[in-house]
Amino acid sequence: MLKKKKSLVTYTIIMCGLIMTVGIACLLFIQNSIVKDDMELQAYEKLSQETRQVRRFLYYDQSKTPSIVTEYYDRDEELENDDKIYVFLKSPDGDFIDGEMPDGCSGKFPYQSDIDVIGFNGAKYYILTRKAKVGLKTLENDNFVICAMVAVKDIKANYKVLWYRTYTVIGVVALFFILFAIGLKRLVAVPMKELNVAINRSGQNLDFTEKLRYDGPFLELDMITESNNNLYDRVQREFERQEEFNANVSHELRTPVAVMHAQCQLSREIAEKNNDHEMLESIAVFERQTTKMKGLIEQLLQMSILDKNNVNLSVEDVDLLDVVESVCDDAEYICKKNIQFCYNLVPTVVKVNMNLIVIVVSNLVSNAIKYSNEGGTVEVTCGSDSENCYISVRDEGRGISKEQKNRIFESFYRADTVRNTEGFGLGLSQVMKIAKHYGGTVQVDSEVGKGSKFTFIIPVDNG
Image (cartoon, rainbow, N blue to C red):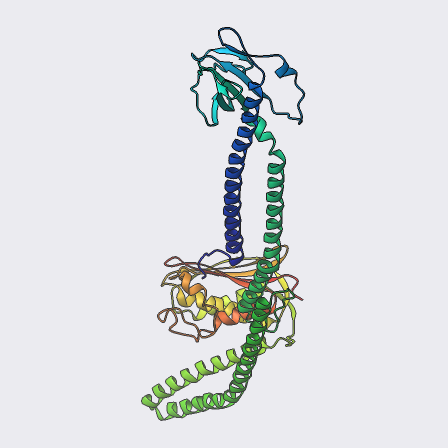
């Protein structure tokens, strides 16, 4: 089982997104710093120019108190300027003398030669203060101050186009990144997922005749596909050699084992006539082992037939209820354990090969008996729904662990040597192959210490 990890494509998209986000954030920070400095410089130039202009329109009365003449407000502007600039005079005590101030401004702030930012009524203003002069001479009473103010938002409005273009570029970059992420996912993640599904399907079905396909632009995925196809070819050839070997060996062993079995029967008759008990015991052991070997050979032959994809088996209308009853009656008769059989059988007619269904029921029932405890119960069910027909066998034995479930359908696999004192580990493998031959499957529901339930499922229309 693979550990849950991040997809390479997802990781790449996340990292690219983080890098892009950090880069945009840094660029916005730099641009914001430059704009802030430029706004301050622009405000300084505007306010400094305005304070120089207002000095030309100052009028001083006999007490040398300055005021701004009306010509200042009536002058023609050489350049069109939408920024609202406030200019006013304040006394040495900080009192307003003349000019125009923003609403809510008290004018009570210290004199300083550099530009500053003040705030009131929820608004911020750039402010520049200069001492009142007559020409180039400062008045004897030089505490009169010229104040010029402009709203920060008015200066900031001059950068509206810049910010609009900036956010437009960010939006375009984000859109291209989203398109890149979608394209990368479709070009890499989707084909990889399809390849993974195809590989898992081949591994589960042990069918490596289906070739993997990749028509995308990436060389690496094409190399992986080609390598897997080469591996498929080698595995399929090995499977074919194994099937051929099993078939040949089974056929070759079938005749000598049959001869040995016949000789055992003949030897037993001779020993019985001579009343040779020691010979009878030896013959019984030998006969039991030859019978076991004969059963193994028959199973290997049957499996080799099922492994052939182009095999044509005779089919007929078979009632699963009749098959289950017949097999269970025989099993109950020869069972040495005190096992109680429970039935829930529904007449179910399906077009299959009779011998294969008998093998399925025999293997499932014999396993249930073998693994059940003394005095246990075996429940056998058969029936159908709109799509599938099924045969289910449940025992109350030791059960199967989760780790063993993944391997119980492998040929010759024995999960527990105590449970499998008899048999060759081919029964469940044979049942699964028969199910897949008809396009079905075998479901396992088991819990350690509480028993197991095997359900053989094939489509009603399996032709």
